[in-house]
Image (cartoon, rainbow, N blue to C red; front, side, top):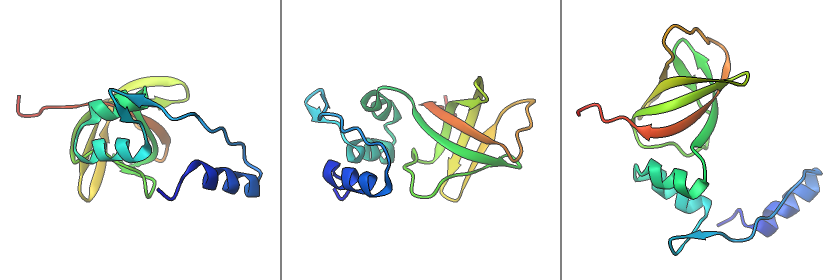
Length: 130
């Protein structure tokens, strides 16, 4: 892709940012890459994406009236409900995140985090039919 190690190193040098290149990794015969992880997420295979990442998928968002303001350009799991952990000031809270094509919302029972930034870890999809 366009974001290969050399181009990222060059960009970081220009911006005086630290950069560490990690040797190519593979698992189960597949080369681990951001493209592979993104494709797993788009296909709805969050478990595989988390396995390739080596940890639950994370993103940071701002909560506004129960809705999530998500950063632009990030990969998201396919629409559905997800068992998540919300991390705020070092505290880990259970949460449910619901994604639709036009909206993302969060349920944190009994906690008002309106206007706060929160890091979300996506652990697994929730089967709402079973």
